[in-house]
Length: 164
Picture 1 (cartoon, rainbow, N blue to C red):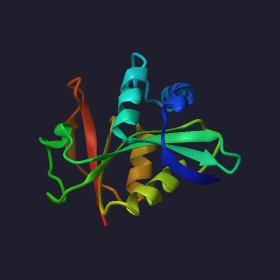
Picture 2 (cartoon, rainbow, N blue to C red):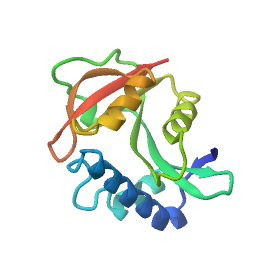
Picture 3 (cartoon, one colour):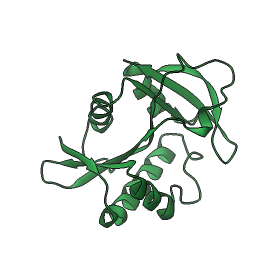
Picture 4 (spheres, rainbow, N blue to C red):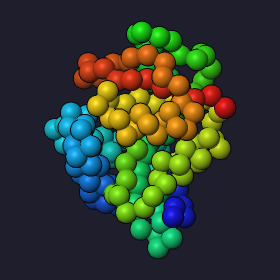
């Protein structure tokens, strides 16, 4: 059970990198081998997100770091252009990026979403077409498929939005 969600600090980076490694293996085992490739997210990106105050960690009742996500205020430059659809509205939003778990606790997605929803009514997220697990979680929790966006490396992602 998630006890605490708090901003990540630089001493969390080694643990975060292990969580991302576990998440990459999980994605590969569930038919999504192409989303987080070449060591993504790199240590430098994680450090930058911590520095910007956008990276958060989830701790269990024993204060063990078991999950992470980024909660980033708009605008996200990758979301400026959407194909094959449209956003639900043009209101300011927050984006949930790089949600990952070490697999030891259930309910990480729900805990993160509850935390984010308490802070913003307009939420957006995106995921790879092969990431059926994340698509299911987003749709189960009220996110609507809005179209296709392209991330910074030029690859497409399914774009979602949830409005409160």
